[in-house]
Image (cartoon, rainbow, N blue to C red; front, side, top):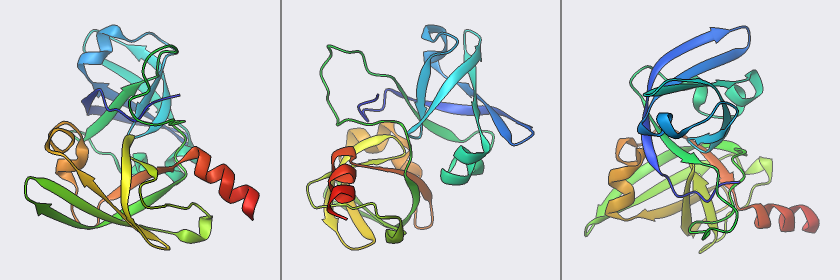
Length: 193
């Protein structure tokens, strides 16, 4: 389980394909604190550390993960949002995030507005994932509140701290992002259908 509060950014330093798997090596200050077999969210995708050094670590994404997320589009030098699993008994600063991406979405607009930024996104509504105004959404692992919600669109407002310390400062129209919809909303939608 995660909170959607990004701890730091990592940089992709190596990508290695093995069969249907992609081994991703990340340079990060977190590396020295990680352990083999530990879960870390990468752009919101929970992956297991399989090897590490003092300055980097490697995780593996399987074919299904690559098909459902934006990890297959990673290139060397790309930034990745990182969050370690939450510690039971700590504050839940974001919202309950499973690290299981539901689908991808596409950024449709970025607008700066008096020191904040508004990002708009579209997604395939046929997969049954709802958004509601003032509800929670996770974009590339970042816990956010939905500002506007449509049938297959939504927008979020980003404060300067989040803009500067996550991948949001790299987004532009056309950027593909990972979406994890609110877990409670998903259960309610499933029960109502």
